[in-house]
Length: 259
Image (cartoon, rainbow, N blue to C red; front, side, top):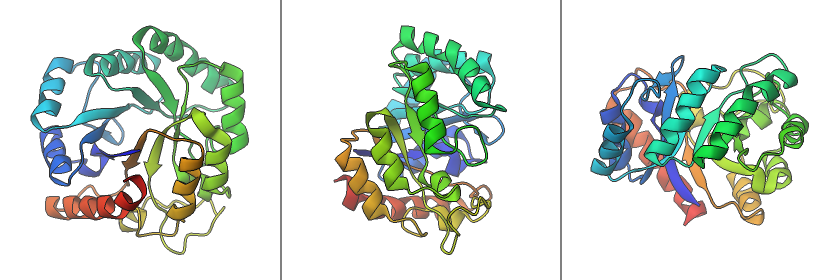
């Protein structure tokens, strides 16, 4: 496993600033956010992938993922092309649709494009969507069965809908292709479905209530060999030194699991 960090925590700052600070925090890989509603550091419809490759090289970073989210097929197809051009191994998508059939319909053309580009498509689990539970995730994987389909797994969302992250990890096995090192605020009630992303400090790995010992034990047991990606929501408006110091602390906490 390797550590990576999302540019999401630097929403409100430029891409160049985000890359510089992530590198200064000790990371060698970055999850590039291209989600207009949350953080658009990358625009696959308009940005120059060669320029981005040079930027990444300048900061000593490699791309861990391109995070798209949303349900815009045109944008997602462009994102797959863009990911291939910058040599990002996967794109993360959301389940921003109303039901399982719509999820399958949305992912179908993405998987066809991904097969021609050598890129994985990784929808992320999310509470209160058609992809929140292990049963729903397994149903999706069974329905599509593409070698270019995996899951970007976020433990807090499993916890919010009442499931144990280690159990989900063991069930997903090799279909888990991107892992979010992301915590749940202290005192959060398992299965409550309440919003947890309003408390950014409690989402920082090692600061909240998740059992990372059992989570990383499960990752090792299934042979996960990917990124442990640090992410949290809500730090827009933080002063830059606070974001980077918090990210550095998260890296120190996680090093015991990935080294």
